[in-house]
Length: 343
Image 1 (cartoon, rainbow, N blue to C red):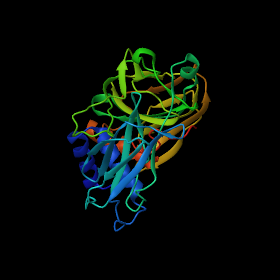
Image 2 (image 1 turned 45 degrees about the vertical axis):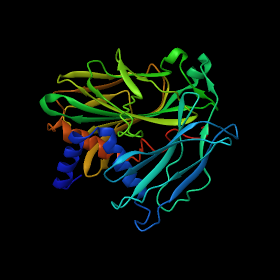
Image 3 (image 1 turned 30 degrees about the horizontal axis):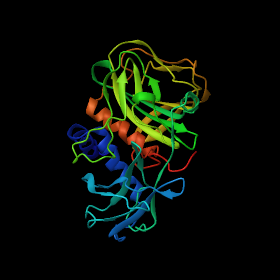
Image 4 (image 1 turned 120 degrees about the vertical axis):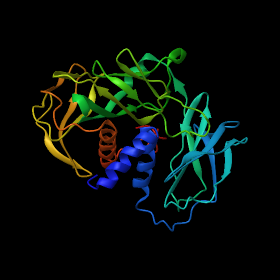
């Protein structure tokens, strides 16, 4: 974001609404840029909720929309005897783009259908549900396929940290916790504060404020069942002003870990990952350190003297992290969230 106006706008958006909602709106915009603004929007959405190829009767379904300046619940319904449902889609917002998608609750698990852009057909839509399992083997099969950690120097010597973590469920069943216990956890550096995450894919207008993730005892815990395929989680936090070494703990074997350090960052070095390479996103410069096939006991350390660069307002730092995430193509709320087919 090289334009000063865009910088100020990003900061205002971050202060005005939850960061993840800003991510959702911006990501939706990025996803539909290839579609003409004149493309006709759906007037109805007709589909089925299916499980093992059979329709699921009596399942609560919801229709959601994301537009340039709004996101919210449009309608609710219940599936018929064959799992079918139909929604009328209100006229498209004139802001230039719209994304609609349906969700369904089946046996206590919320399943997401694919996102539809203007011009996509509104018939033949499916929300796919799965059987569930709580076995220890199923929980152990979950893995981190990718973890992106973004470090931006904040004011008074601290760091703004944004993470995008993709958790893969390789099974053909949804993994649920016994008695509501989390099925996945990820440690973060000690001393972290101002942990923030929420679920922008559900409507703010309903008054629901679900939390897919919670911070407890130094671990970020997933509080939702994990459906087959990959699921992206986004969260951010602050590290207090200090000098010395930051250790980045792993939850288990990690297929790919990418660590981004915003530049300039004199006095900062990274240990445990291959040499960094320059990386630029939205006019911001970073050094990216990437490791693959990392074991659970891998030791990743960031050493620095002071804050590692010119201080950045926390709101702007969050905007910078957002821009980088979007530039990397992470479409948190709607891209494979969660996947409808096993990985």
